[in-house]
Image: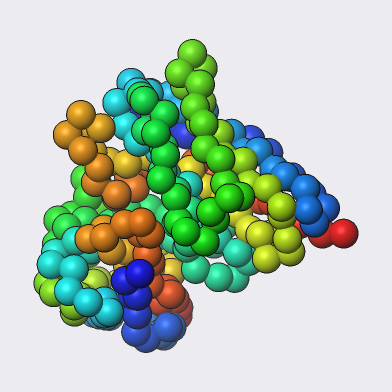
Length: 107
Length: 124
């Protein structure tokens, strides 16, 4: 199974900040990497797929980059509604599909 | 609009089985795979398996071998996930999620629409 490791596991930030979250795969997954946002009590929401393609309706302050084993999610100008937990997910090899452990972005 | 509506919360005893339903609407049901993902309290996301809504073929994580059954009813656009031999570690919110790629193209393994989640509590 491909292991996905996110860092940090949590971070504190302020409105307007630029935030970067890292996801590392245990082997090369090319660009087969997605990012999801989850708010408490809600289902996850797809933000970015294919490492860098923004899902329809997602604000452009979200961006993704990387390939191979190292990936980043960047929020360029943190809004109040961006405080949530973010997960990466690899789609390179399944079963199983695997997720990172999550990064909680808090005030 | 695309919607996935799941069945309500369940409380089960260890060793029992649970069957969660996921009713799809707003799109052609048979055109997209459906995945199941679970989340234990305070924990991360765990992929469980996938079903082809058209042909009914399934694939699942090895971890659930022998315990998971996924089925679909095309007449009601509903997918079911049954998990047997429940233990306390199976206490979680269970989500169904649609694969974003049309099944005639293949599998995207990317989840664009999610159900609201079903809490399954396993307790004696």
